[in-house]
Length: 454
Ligand code: SF4
Image 1 (cartoon, rainbow, N blue to C red):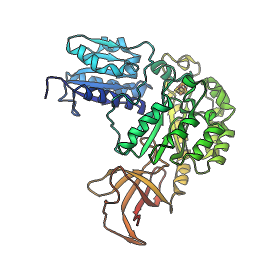
Image 2: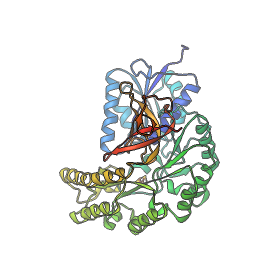
Image 3: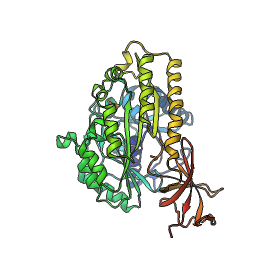
Image 4: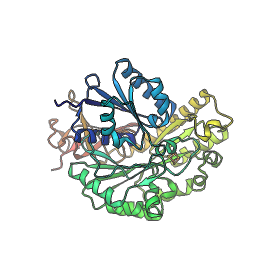
């Protein structure tokens, strides 16, 4: 070991934070720092925090306190660092540096300054940085999958959302830069690339003067990678051009993650998303007609201030009518610094919890029914984990995105029709895509057997 300190990273939050973590790791390794997976042994621990909602902050604070009690030297990065920069330095003597969401690429310089005895606050008031294909990156996801950030920040100001205040306005990468990184990832053996940003349908608006998602998808269609998936498609951005690009790009998975948040026009207006109320029903029908095999995922917030029983019933009917494949539900969390924090008619926690429960209860049989339609089909599955004891493999088909959706549990290799062979995994190495015959389903997951491709 040289005389450079060793560093561990504790990672919290979403996949956007994960990419920042991966760039910090890449930059540190390139600069010759030893990255230790064991926080106890490392000289420094970087905590890449999340500040999305109260529960996420509590988790970040718990991690910080545990490390402080273990007398670690802590570098705080991520959304909480951007949010509570001064407060963190004041209240946590173990924090040797605080780095903002637009400054994580300065990690090596910050560590050098800390080594010289400085206590560093490196936080740009407005984050403007975005990494590109030349920024070193050390991936932390399973072998076959990688996130690819097409833009950072958001120009909308939804009343409940703190993100634009923590991540800045939208800044997109060029199509060339994104394609170059996609090619690098494909050459490293990545089988699934997941495009992310705050609003992927607004991709390009800031640098090209209009959204360029359709052009981006077509350009990515030329990259030799079997699966490309997109997160955070706003219904208004799914123009006929984008839908045509999805239809005509063979490696693009027909999976749409539409963060709708609510269905009632009054709540959408109060959320500062009035544009959405006009298009919800129509656009979902249009997507279903144009892309009949599309898997639809969405998220809703229940308990937004002023949400009446009538508004909530409207949401339940909407969910029932559209039969989404996957639904995520959040209870409203009042975030200081956002307009919704001061809105009247905040709902009691019990009402929010009850509404959360009712949406989950309503959606469960719908998800079960949608998954059930996969039974009897042979689907491609990306193998991601192996249970060393049972030999069972775990992967995902195109209908499941990592972390948020279900999985496919895969048993044995079906060598001949009706005859189950030894559970040989030759055909199913981790990080490969194999055909799996689906034999059963529940509300979350699918179960099947590998079909011998010969
Ligand atoms: S919810 Fe999404 S669109 Fe709205 S401000 Fe937040 S990041 Fe932007």
